[in-house]
Amino acid sequence: MGHYYSGMLDIYTDITNQIAHFGNHFEILEVDELSMLTTQVSDKEIDKRVALFYKTFDIQKDCSMVELRRSAKTSVALDMLINKHKLGSMAYYYMGTENTLNNETINSIILGNSLLTEKGIPVAGEYEIKMFRP
Image (cartoon, rainbow, N blue to C red; front, side, top):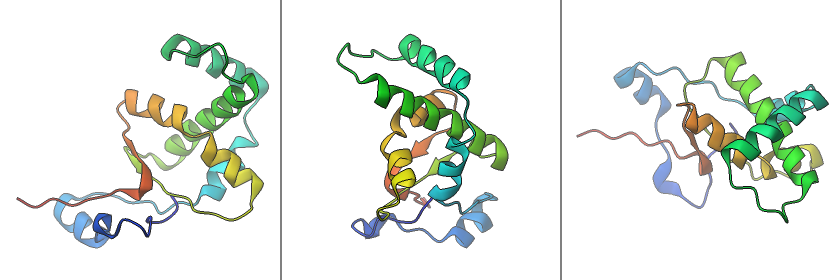
């Protein structure tokens, strides 16, 4: 989702080569889609996800409930995105502009990424996709 981080040129990969060797399927997604999905998340879903966060993570007492709820909303939207595109893993990087919704989405993505990874759907930041050939 997004594009490669230009500060790490060693992580670029040839997607066509990956598909040819490993049979992968790639979806090139934009953060805008995830941001749009956050607008469809209900308060009930957010409450349920916040409860899951407290059960799964060591949430500190000084953690802002506003930020925790924003992370919960993004986490539910991530699940929606994964299900919509039938993703088995995800890599992302967003440099962005002053698009407030996209910035809020990306700034609140980490807990959702951790839950996905726990469920066996690994997530890599900085769009880190590497191909290794022995």
